[in-house]
Length: 391
Image (cartoon, rainbow, N blue to C red; front, side, top):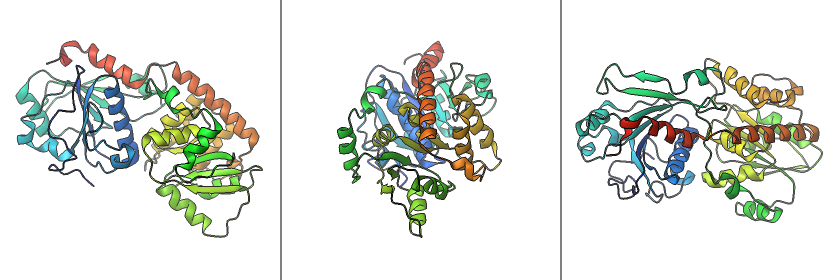
């Protein structure tokens, strides 16, 4: 569902935006519902948790209904969610408080009428940030925080800044809430079992694997590699494309005594985080679930968002190099992303699992030593001085 301008889920007032923090407008035009909205909502929630005030302008809010319960109803302090159509309502924008910061997520363009409405209030430009997609490629360090003067249109004379999340200290870092380590750890087998039982998963101590993938994933190869693993495996399949793929395969002659499969309902971001931390191996897709899997510190296989020109090949390899992935993990990634069909690529055994765990733990340790994305964003904005002077 799109959020209509007259919906009670689109708060017209700012009563939920209290406090002394800066006011941020975050703009999101959905391409991949789960990923783009997921990243934007986590950023908004983290900003609000650090004392900032946030308006999220969203073209399609349907995903938030289950991803972040209460978000559409304004139940999260210091965040309001607004329909994209309101960014083009010149009359409604007249009463809107000008924000200190604009974030264009993933290259979406702020409508000219919104910019014009802003300039009617003030000539003091907001700190304008183009938040890019996550990449480990070398150009990210060179491009991070580069200014881009606006040469035409209602924002002529102002400046945008390119902002790149990344895996090194010379980038914008990764989204990581201050509480992530303490809040998400399921500290005992009993607590893990109780949490899984909420979703009808009867766990008996088997190795747990989560599966979240695009339709193009080579799911058949994964199931074939698991059915003869040598010890019990419990596969937890997320709602959507992953569930459809697995059910199609299991409806045929596929048989396994050691592989158990459970299907999960749509779950919130918080519950998904718990899932990643509870599992022994996570298959993830896109950007949001990759970052959350990294913080879980468990072995992971990433399905990168496919691009028609094949640019995702280099992006995937750059990530694997940055991760210092061993050959077995590199081969699995190539196989999972359809870049090789070699049967040897999908070897999965206890030795490989142990190797992958060491890699994941070491990579998380290196990433934890770096400053997180939200902290860096706030510092960057505040460093612009007069451009974000509180009104």
